[in-house]
Length: 117
Image (cartoon, rainbow, N blue to C red; front, top):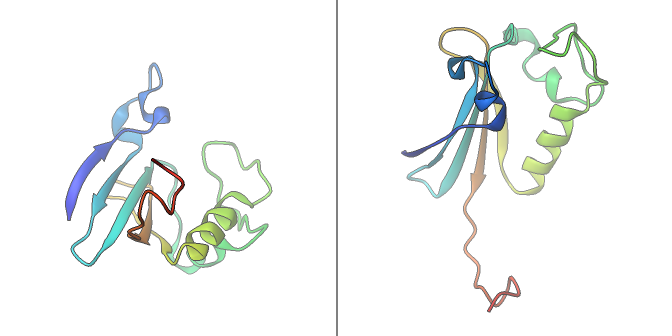
């Protein structure tokens, strides 16, 4: 994988330790692009890793928002990724927390098809 480091805005917030979260983007050899987003929260237990992508699933797993939210964010991500022919998974983040991985196929299109000059 060819890696390109991308630091998400939250990781650059004043006073925030950049080791607590962040992400990277890379091109895989099989024609996919991978986005990895690290979260420094409590992580996601293995038995909940598929359910957290369901609508309204909260499963008692709370992040840095104190358990607020209705459980739609990850469901929306998963739906959009599927619409584009990709996959989204959650893994353990080295050092603790969760790592969310989105793999998308690279689709080549002409600039004319995109309405560009």
